[in-house]
Image 1 (spheres, one colour):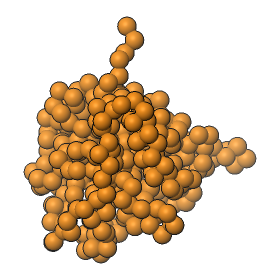
Image 2 (cartoon, rainbow, N blue to C red):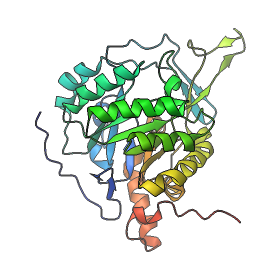
Image 3 (tube, rainbow, N blue to C red):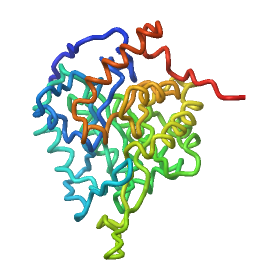
Length: 319
């Protein structure tokens, strides 16, 4: 397939390199929050050019209907979701969705989900033969009964998935790590050895909401993934822990979890993120990215910082 040349708007203070790809902003729209890349363009004032990359909705080898409703529940400072990877299948995404995307606006990243190592490899090969810029390996989805955390909570299994995907493509691979594990740094180390080019830290945190009248879980799946500001402190710590391993190999991180304002973005970058993911905030602030870019630029100018990358991993721990 022929891919359109990338001619994105530039802001020298926000331009970054991520896994060899040029991003016009450190902001990345997260998988599951923007469909297959064009949904938010229907909103007046929204532009894909305001972000460095967009992660497409989680995609499996075959079509999935997802979980039964209810699949979403608002919580204090957050949201539970158990969509269950509803998608039309990887080949349909490549054949019918990708041709509609304007690759001159931003970078597009496929999100791969599977129930076996073989399935992950097959999906990778399908997207390898497409204009997609990079692939995110989702080994940390808490909302499916097979796959997901089954791989993501075991460093050895995580590495085997990454290794299989690595054999199937030379495009950048970004491994999405679960917070629902004992030692996220060890998992990161194993994935680096297996060939990952980057990390997305973190996926949602497993949680539950209860209907006190029915005495049943609000979510039909019983549990879901918690996102939003409630998980930000956990996400910051996990980014810091992964960065301690990743920095020695120059492996970049997309930090994510509860980011709503520019101060959050700066915190994640100081903790070790090269790029920062925006997800739940889009549901109530669809134009938040333009605002964040403006405020980030103002912060950098005020502090005489030439580029946002100068802040990556500058956290100084208390003695």
